[in-house]
Amino acid sequence: MSKQQIRHIIEQHSQRDGLTETGIKGVQLFQATSAIPCVPAVYEPCVIAIVSGAKEAVLDGKRYVYDDSRYMCCPMSMPVKAGTPSASPQIPLYGVLIALDARLMAELSLEMESAGNLIPPTPGDLRAEGIKLAAWDDAFSDALLRLLQLGQSETDRAVLSDARLRELYYAILKGEAGVFARRAFGAGNAVARAISHVAAHLDAPISIDDMAQRAGMSRAVFHRKFKKVTTMSPIQFVKSMRLNHAAMKIAGGTTVSEAAMGVGYVSASQFSREFKRMYGQSPREWSDAQQMAAGLA
Image 1 (cartoon, helix red, strand yellow):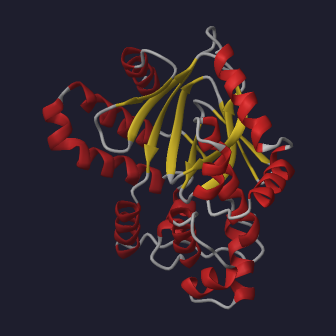
Image 2 (cartoon, helix red, strand yellow):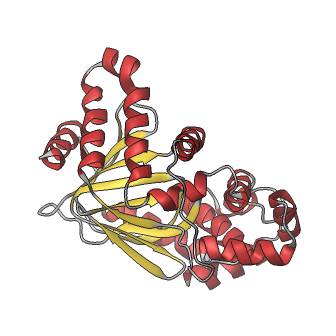
């Protein structure tokens, strides 16, 4: 019942394809009525919940498909390819994007641990993921509905949005992706802190030694732990973040040279080589293809 009510709210407030603000900080509604192939993107810390249709994300070659049975939790910035390949006017995609506030998630994680809800130890050979799909449960559905219902009243949003967001975050931390998210937002996650620094400083020189030093680890230990958390090596991760950000900028109309400089590339030829190696097209070909796709939409 909650999902049907959430869908009704999205249908009421989304007038066109794309994102729609709710008036609640970090919470947006979205719809898509046409198929969009998976293209380079960067997921910032977020949860994405789908109530109609399906959405896809690809991280380091692994494909994640989520719909109204599973929501997506991404607690750290991740370079992905994302799209809505199955959306159509007959089967529209409706969903909610909830940005995850690191301070609040860390605060709740610590409160849960203080209350005795300790994070279970992870076997040494268990490989972590940068993205986790979690089954919708009643606590998540009800908390999300209660949050979205605030959008109908400016007074309700001003008075209750912080409390309702806290309730939703708590439902996420107690749900199927809870342990995964708590590991990312826990005070001791040095890898998550390193990723946050990288995401905020893509235009500056970034070395693996600097990342390891910031995490308080040797280069070898940091490399091993980073790959366990993200499935990618630090070098691969930084390159993917930079190129995905650049691809998004180019698709949005930024010139190739500006996009390259904006993510820290000094050499235009190196940027073009690495871009084509990753996406199979030169930056110029990518730009032309995105403009053509926009013209056909």
